Length: 262
Image 1 (cartoon, helix red, strand yellow):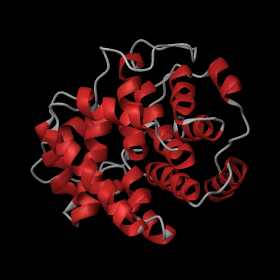
Image 2: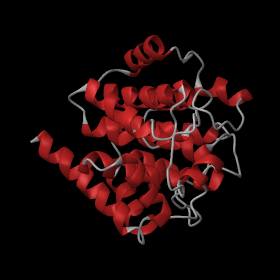
Image 3: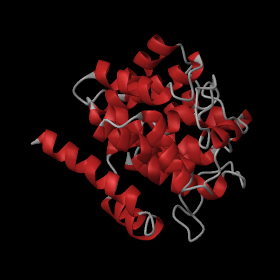
Image 4: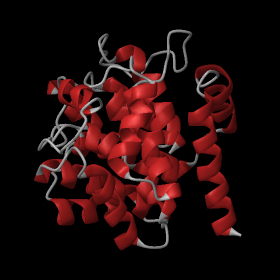
């Protein structure tokens, strides 16, 4: 989960100032959390406390109204009778990491949780698939599967083309807000990485929807490599300093994991 939030924060300044290099300052004074972090926290809250998904997602996003939500989702937040709107946007995948995090011993439960929190908005088959593939990749990484094994399984299960390297993707890649144009690329960025930071740098260097690419690659890389403690400390004390509710649900999420691991 923190992998998604840190990826979002680091990528925030490059979403509309896109770059095609891995050589950039990682944390800057201009970084901030966006809708990716808010929605990830909402999903964690939903799954941790068995809350109604639609109502809870709306409440979280209404508390943070200025976080650059997508057009349809931005309207959905305030609807009195919100219904899914057949979206295949990459918002389905950027928020779903808690599903894998909370169900590391049960793939079926992780995928069912992914479906639950995705179908409230992104019920198009590609939206559901993008969220499931992201959840599955994170889950496999938590099982200690190698990047090659994860690549093979995700390719076979979801039909994504993961044959290109990050360098090859970067050459012709452009801004894309769809699951099918974001999830495979973000997964590749994580699987090709040598560290958590490297995965985030890979994602941002594609020159696309940087915060969301990094929010998808980040939790896969977290499961593969872990996150340096100083990055977590900086995130919580600097970038989430006024977001007590997000910090609370992060704490609950990781306490839940620690308790289940003992």
